[in-house]
Length: 444
Length: 132
Figure 1 (cartoon, rainbow over the protein chains, first blue to last red):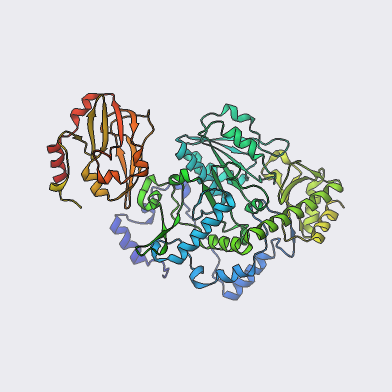
Figure 2 (cartoon, each protein chain N blue to C red):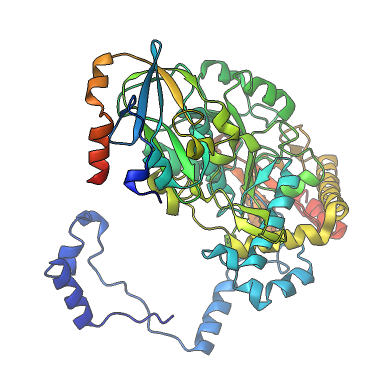
């Protein structure tokens, strides 16, 4: 397909067809303040070589591994990606993956989606997973919308220990539509405080993240009991690091009704923040209210195995305004990579990788503690935890950066009460030597 | 699809313009969709019904019926309280196609305004709307 701009003649022909004198008149319904009335001011085009030089210059201004030691996760994690995945993804029939519109002629694509769904539903411990969403944040927003459809209620509670940017996406989805969001604070243990729940009645859902934004593992068993005290209220479990379920119990096993979150850890590069992959799973009973596409296995007239898009009547192209979501696609290539990643590691490999992440983080936590650095929350964690650097923390952080060490994410930007707190992430990519350097420099 | 002459439209029912039917049964009214509606929809694969106790106005949506090719809303032919729903449709939605007036009934309601019955069509009037 060619993308050529319209000629002035074509533009005026189209304008006269719709009865507008000029482009301004066509856009008259857009408020004046939202319209740009100056030229874009773009630079002249660059040659391939000039552009290369420009991009190199840009990348020189950012802290990237391995030049820098980056101990930052916070929703995007540095994991090794087996070479086999990179190679397989480049196969033509896979690299051009897009959500199938003439679905049943794309048996291979449907089978990949079906296997991806199977692996995700096992990982999350729930009956059924969809063909994927855009990313973790939109998956959470969609989960809350789904809970409101199922329960026919219009109010949800969201933990403050959920990723702050996920909460902003939830706000964007829910508030203009008139839905009410109640925030649940966290306690001194870095866990969600449910004591405010007693006052909030008629909740469609309570959303919690585990491990949460502070890396703390929530007491899901206790929360599940409290949340399901109202039998209708749904427990929506979100996550940014699905690798944690190689070590900790899955959301489904802990009683979640919907599990949703980010799948970037499963074989996707961090790529300056995206694309991500929204994992989404729920119980069979609620499948008709689930958003997104769904591949199913069936048999043809001759009894041979085949794959179909199933329950498509939930979707926009059939149900229009009453569809379960406006998503009518999936994150095809990223979901394929995630399926390959899970299949490559297998259950045993997945558990071992999770264990290495945990062990590395625990080693660093222990060493920092031994050297007088305060650990903010005394709660079990996975591969992230919060430290408190105390007075002069900003100076220490800057000095470390000058030494090409990024000592975690400063939390005060998202939680004003957490000044001098830093969220540290350690994965399998850090060696003991790296961790020892961090300890030495932080405590120097 | 059936010819209009071949449609089964019992004389003792009342029909709405949205193709629902209503039949008096004791002090309740039984409601479903007409032979014409099921025929237009094709194979029904799922029927979503309201909860017992729901109070619904005439013209309000009381559920949806899903076929292999479309989803349609179900509308109340009269205002009333839902007293019973046809649980069997959960496992056998095809009853709506096979037997829209007996096995394929959907809900039983206690009407709040029995005058609304007069606004529904008899067989002849309904047939006339179908013929356009």
